[in-house]
Image 1 (spheres, rainbow, N blue to C red):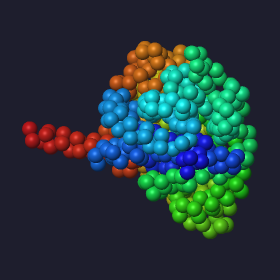
Image 2 (image 1 turned 90 degrees about the vertical axis):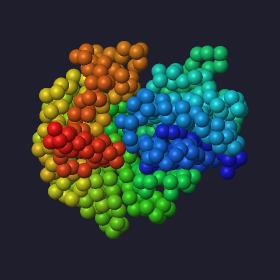
Image 3 (image 1 turned 180 degrees about the horizontal axis):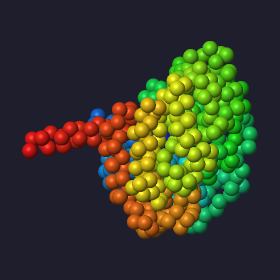
Length: 485
């Protein structure tokens, strides 16, 4: 298949081994519809196979807080470099002239290293970076010359145009949507409009994916692209133009197709907010209920006034078993600074969680610690809210320190949020607050929340559970030592 491919896509470690990559599946199906061939290699899974068993458990993208520890990431990068040549050889065994890497905020260092080694062995290969880590031309400028082009934002039409240009001789000067490292220095960026009608895109293809290796056993799917929210810490509204919802008939047809092909009956909505459009979500649920398909569905949600108990009951009847609510903070002041109160205050948060739990849907929450300006009192309000509402909160899925992602309001307007970057960076975890907030202090705040959660009867997400268990053990050790003395 490699000899027939115009491009080979690669997922580079550390990346998600829970779900197959939906973005690449969209790219492959669109290219196929336009007459181009593509292949896919999951270098992340290939690298995991080279690790000793204890390290394999760590190499799961869902442990985001682990990977944001620069020292731990550096240690694994050294391990990665020792195995990198094998990954490069696997890529070069395919004859495709184009190699496209899926890049995000935690794997770009690894992608750059693979690209460098590919160019050393075969300078003729054209290297393209794309994905959520390539959202801004300014970010693209940080990549070395071994990265020929960056596909900025949506990639289906852009990558097809790149493939056509390579077939025609390699002149990409007329292709829009790419950032180019020019020979001899300098760069060029030609923006492209977003896909206004997302229903023109064919059903994503997972034909090239080793589906048996993704331990989540879930089908990733989208009802929409973009987001109706404007949270200060989130980059979705910058990466995706507006909010574009798909026709539910197309989504339902995709569900039927993917369930039939994969044999999986679990769906994971990759939408920023699955409940952003209650009318279309309700229609989709009606179609699923009428089909009598037995599905287990999950997704991310946000507290909103229009998310009613009736809608949640319908979602449960359609197969929704879990909603992951991004409450982030229960402090009204921090919610306001985050712009999390855009669609509802803390009373709406509590009502949505209560209705979700009563509907029989597992009610999980996410928390962000150390948002710019957050005080001990603010954080205590969040902890108190969680502790006081254990009867309606089933699980804490994520507990993250606040990262200043590129193209978020935090990084675009740092003075407004009272932060700066002392090391010359423009994004990341190492921002400093004018109130004295540092990454080290934010980690201590997070540790305090972990200790508080360890006293509750809640369940916890995959990456958080081991920390909670350690905190519980330390609590009993402390009590033993106290009585022993």
